[in-house]
Length: 458
Image (cartoon, rainbow, N blue to C red; front, top):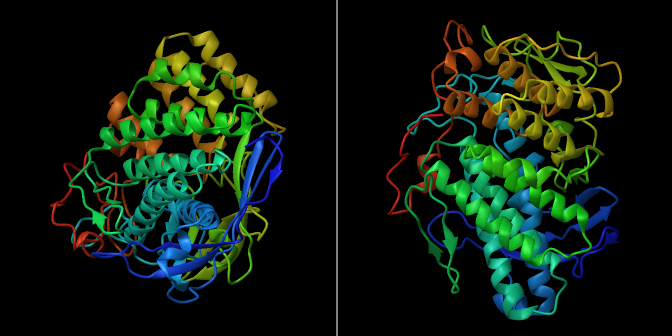
């Protein structure tokens, strides 16, 4: 796809909702208009309620294949930052991926007693993130089906459709690895529409699957689409950073402009996929959660501002400014993160002047006024925590915080009770010790190959 506006070839998608043992039913979703302009991508989607059962043969056409791709993209957009979903059902109480990870980490909290928020989510009682597992699986399988249909019925379609579907599959692999325990199933669909089940796939295996999907995406990405290629580069870098292969990540993002952003623009009407905070008020932005959460609100950092929008059970609901607007564009990845990855890699090589210059150059040229230069704290431990604090404030509510906290524990040996919320949680209860969520038993009920997580480690 070139860096100019492109409207999808079909305005309506008919795809399969993959929940339960076999295919549920054919549902209709109005497709997305995908715009690539300058250094940003905006996917505008509309997701109405199903319009009834349709003949599967209707998809075995050029337009049917294109519509399937648009629909899979639409599900992905809901997974990342939306609230409305298929069949009129919505993302669970803890929000989509970009919010749920922050609930388990220290960005957000729920006004109800959701155990994901309390870090005690276990297989018998998984907490509010349970529904997201099904939606991520839906996006992954629908993208796989779209790839099959694009090859079979739309082989002459613009190649960005295939590239987008491989990107969706790669990011759903990453989302599963960052939000859930090591060892979740990643099922797919066969040619006849039946579900092909898997057993537990480890966290690192999911990263490697994502890298392979990104390589496929790159093979189909138009050569004149710098925006799509930047997005793929950032995704691959994220997988490499999750694998602690820092030197593989840095060269990938070197050419990504700091001002680049991949953003999902939500439509905002009641029948469409809305940004989570447009209407939902189950989640509030917290400040110093537990004993050791970051001071996101009280820092009064120019990168973050918040609005008080409600009060439930004596708990004020704070929402990041602009995130409760129907025109909010949710950033999935950005050139800001490219510079932050570079800074972290420099720190890993003990290049302290280069590390500090990278962070301060971002503060000076990252598009936010009023950020004073940082001073080297003088030791590796504090340098590391400062790096991840910068990541937390630059990438707030973009779905990176939980993965970052898990990396601090897993890759850098920081005790989890130093970075994850601890102490008093709610109504006399204490925070638990889990650093990840689990699927709901009902979501894997019909999978004969899955027996549970490999481990609950970070």
